[in-house]
Length: 140
Picture 1 (cartoon, rainbow, N blue to C red):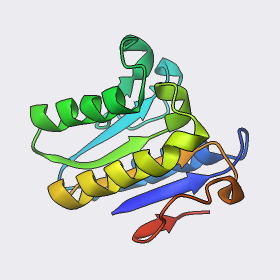
Picture 2 (picture 1 turned 90 degrees about the vertical axis):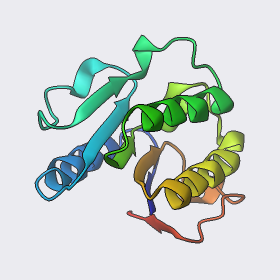
Picture 3 (picture 1 turned 90 degrees about the horizontal axis):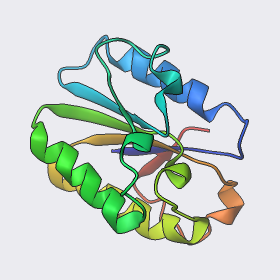
Picture 4 (picture 1 turned 180 degrees about the horizontal axis):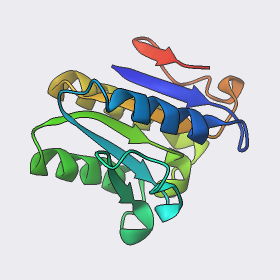
């Protein structure tokens, strides 16, 4: 399943994602991954959540490389239950026009591998007119 939080910067998406991840760790049967731009949130998240900081991976610069990066994470750990993608547009120069393709690929990965994704997108819902939200839960 794919869930998204949509809204402009400063609307509380990251705070909500931290709450969701910390709540999920209590009942998770698998591993939880939280991908963020930098190390700023590392102490806000439960110690059982693996935090990945994209600043450490400067060569991931576009949508395809980012999807490949996610596949690399999946190939190294078959116990992943949920991946949180906080602020995907800040991670790899992903622009609003790339979001429909990116969301499509994330939905495929979720369906093919049985992994849940929760991601935040810094844009208004009206700006995402080309995104196929079928099968996606919008959390806000």
